[in-house]
Length: 278
Picture 1: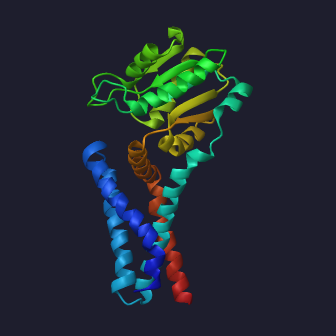
Picture 2: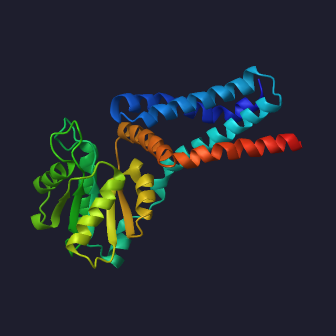
Picture 3: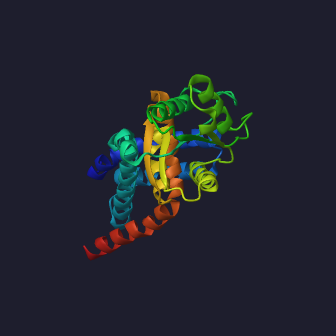
């Protein structure tokens, strides 16, 4: 057994877990074909690494294929670890709020339990946002962002607003709804449109509330909008966290799929040149 196999073993283990998770997500939850295509891609890469490091004699092309697969798999493994750890490096939003006095908070929607109820995951986001808003003496506007999915009986934004009104004493005029979004990117874009329609000279200070596992992708998307923002996360259960990390991992690869595709010829091209020069 080649020493290359031991170098790739951590990434292979992680990779096979993502294969199973991608099939589960693609079949049962997101119905996104990209999840299945990524799972097939993982299978091919993982099989190629095993074949190149265990079965085949390490000739010229086999060595290039094995090294390329190891680099790619460990890069994906690094993305996974970074995704797990990113939310831990965020600063608490309270010092930022004291300085900037943000006037708008946005709570990102999530799937409604039984198609109409706010579940523990979404309830955690709402609770975190409302407790922060009540601490702010300026009583910021809280915008609940989320449209209606095909298997939901009402828009997520409406269900979230009703939940907040039921559980927290807060001025109804400062609880807004955005109910046209179906993705995180649309959540942010549509929320900004709502704000600018009401306040064209808005200085661009925003607090985004979401779950811990959703933090990295939200941060990346919000950075593209050139606004002064901070993210506050709510802690999710162990089961929701791992399921959410799996979805985020697939979504990040989907979001940057062109970079992933372009990296393949770069990785293998450089290795081919190095092996030829060697």
